[in-house]
Length: 434
Image (cartoon, rainbow, N blue to C red):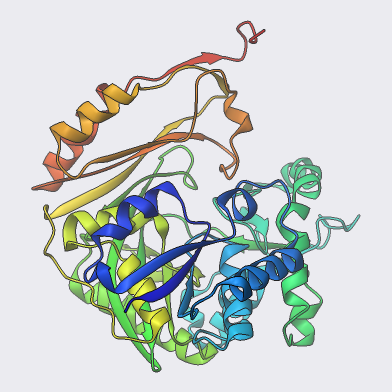
């Protein structure tokens, strides 16, 4: 007998990763809502997605043992709603929102780990006096209370720059703001949070200097468990732009323990239980201070393949087993390599895609370095600005997952793979395609 596990937005990466789970014969995986509905859509009608998912589950002839997902909102928000309707274990809707409603999360963080929280405030981009309403010091980051991949996130140096970006934010904030308002309507919110809708922003003091890392873990029966710590390497010119994830982290053990202790205090405060999470930190080594950047009520899809390379299974193992209510059967350091990375293949200027690596070129890279995976986000003839879920400064042409024996060898391997994966991007100043 196998467990029926429903995956929201089942994609090509997870279809490659899931067969690597330990005891994979114990699971039967089923897609719940398509990738086009929960990731690639222009709009996310939350109530309709809930109804469609529940109808699909109702039609299923067997038991529904677990519902899982690894995408950001709306997938992350569908999980607590659908599990509640089906009587499955998982965090409450309010605990989910205390993680992913950026303003509510900061309020809760400030009450239990204030030393890790920057100055912040809510800001209404539709307020004619929004600039005058700024109370924290410049410079600061501004971003919607619900978005991801640095969508509509800007570093603001002065009032004039804020005036310039507010119209951009107003035009785009509804894409996530409208469905987020639908989910918050289902929860019990304190008055100070209810006044801050999905169409609001949060402004935060700059904490993005120093080293960044992500703690991947899970909570089961009220106990917080660490799965692994991943380093994030950012672009020197645009600090909000991620270039590479490396696993395992090179941070000292004592610092990792401090981050885990902070995580335990926060998750206990909000009553988060029976689900995985990832929490991002910045480390200011000069001040010996850790800053909490954000927490997500899910595993990071971006890290699955590098856990596979180092530990011997993707941490989808944790996502699935916790959802089933069993102790995760996640291996540790049983993979092919001591260190691994996810390298984002980015460019910083818009343009037309004239050439992408061929299937043969990709196969050659994956064969040359066992365990390596290449995934493209673009195709020939498209314009980079048509890509969805990009940050405000760059475009991700694709990603490379690979491993090596040492960090130095890993850097060399990444450069070698990049040379074997040629892209050609024509600047916009050139003739547009006919």
